[in-house]
Length: 74
Image 1 (cartoon, rainbow, N blue to C red):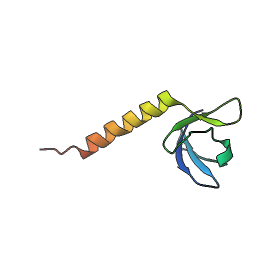
Image 2: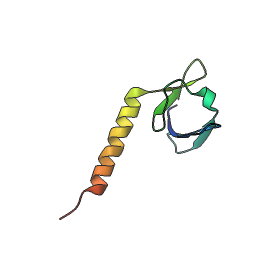
Image 3: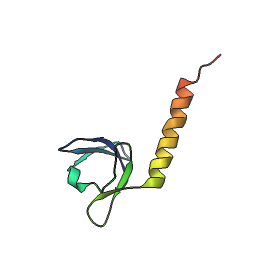
């Protein structure tokens, strides 16, 4: 299961799964270095770890959508 990190607060981390469902986990369940916008997956150690390839693909897809939305039509 992969989720995107929507928001990190001192008391909770808000994730969204591939189906659009919201999940909340304690900040202590994140592996070091996880940031908002990352795509994460649960590891065998009980922590959520960044999936660098999925994160890069998601950011590229979003960038492409934003470019299309911001394009000015003649």
